[in-house]
Length: 290
Length: 270
Image (tube, rainbow over all chains, first blue to last red; front, side, top):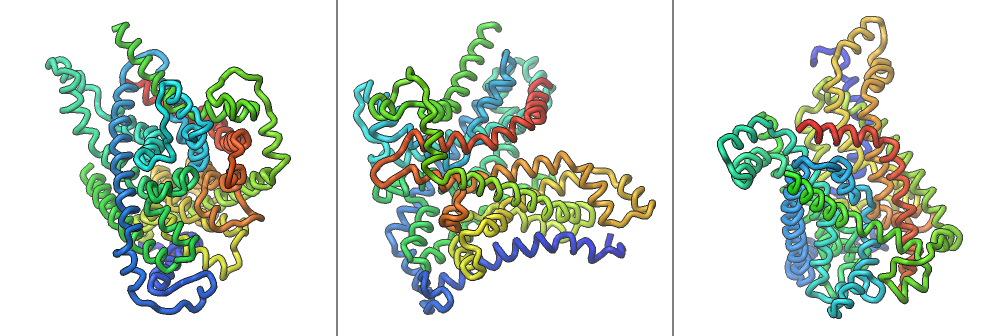
């Protein structure tokens, strides 16, 4: 193809997209590194004073950052683990033959159509202490607890929302993976008298590993950046019980501590980049293997 | 055997209930008279009212927010197609940039948008793009183009070269070939990209929250006006959420045949 006289034509095709993406991603990224080394405020963004690594030092000694990292890790690990388990259960269920499974499996996907902000409002409506349906139902059974005001359960409530919102996504990918496993393998195992647990453990699970890995990595990346539902429902509170890294970056941005916010962004970017590298390595070693 | 399939249906119905109850409840509250929302939050027997929907449109600039969102989502998804199709074509046909360019597009999709908000905010301030619809249209390209490039690339790869070569022999230019032949053959991918980009832009929250103030507020951010400091207008908030779900549902309805076919074909095969 290099002999092609249209050598520059192929570059012309990508230039407009490349220009916009570079302007709005690479340039901001470089600007972010610059800002992270300066004491930036809304009023001095043309000429912020240089402070060296002080913003980074403040991040590493800040209790807020420690709590946010801890909350984010708990959130990501708990949510993705439950989504994986429920996704496996659902795709196993919908792999069985029963009447109505076509329409029922589509109805399971409804959360995918919703805006993340609406998911936030919706669960605010369900969890709200005074007028929410869930506290109202709990009161009927004699439990007088506040969900959103209780530091011990509020993070779990946010994780529950993530599970509700994203299990269908996990289900689609795992289900597609299960469909691609050849039927002959199952038939052979059944003639050999394998139990359904053995079939799941020794046939489905190993052959599903690529799908599980892709789905899990995508979910880790997305759970890591969750913002809307927490912002809408608790804003990171009460106290800092639901403050994740995204919420913390946003909070330091709106409270004027922009240099710190920029330094945090650089760290988040590096973390996301490392996860991407892992995904990339895995995906490409898979596609080479196939 | 009969017993087993009853068990499966029951389990499937439980799953459907779990994933749909919050949405149904949102619809119930949007139709519930205000006094009942506060006095009997769990009630389900009441005379439905449309007062909340009326209030949403008459007492707030929600119609403006909706039209802003429609304009931004439509324009930005069309722009996504215009920008990404040539890239997907170039990578598929000429291997432009090799694997690393493709990976670069993917990695853009993966970095969390929150890391860009500070520089983007000041960049927009400098370019005078704050609170402008054009600003949102441009910034939405950062997450829509990478996905679109991937879809277009894999779709164009599957289209045989024969059609293009025949047209080239007949004297068509490369650009004519792309717009008149490849683009048409790739119509299913174009539709898929349009739907995905439209829904992503329609639902976007973080950039719209930071980069708009009043003039170009979108519905997802604008519906926050029903959450006051001391009280929440639950009925109006729910009605706004229901209104916001409608455009993606209409799109999904228009493409239902594609969705259901693709999904049930996999189901029936087994």
